[in-house]
Length: 156
Figure 1: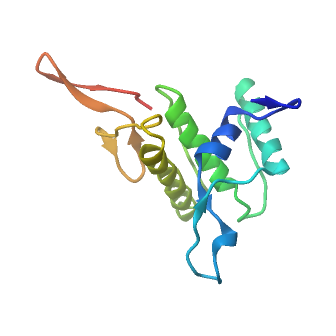
Figure 2: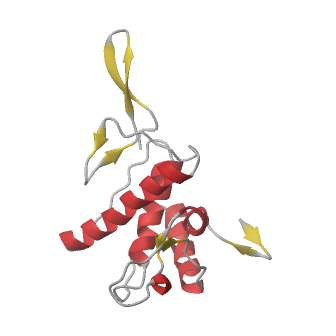
């Protein structure tokens, strides 16, 4: 999408319009519950999304060195959720140095998929009948064709 000469990538558009994250300003005091809200636009994120898009177009990998706790796990979770929902037969892999970091980001991906299933009026709805575990999800269902159980569907 381009406005006034500025283009946001598909992943960035998805992040701003279809991904929800915890709003830090909604907590009355430290440790109290926070509400989910859509992300705000930040220039540093805009640049990162373009970096990821360039890496995709050049069929190269991307790496990011950054401080912890500044929201890039949310961005990575949104990129994975977007690929899972937008590209048929996509294989999306998430890795992290420590299992704890991996699990926290996986939670964000699974929350994003649940949000899309529940609140997009079926636009991003994906059944996960064949594989739906904590570490692996597959957008597919079983159908019976000529007495045989066949896996079919989006297959991401």
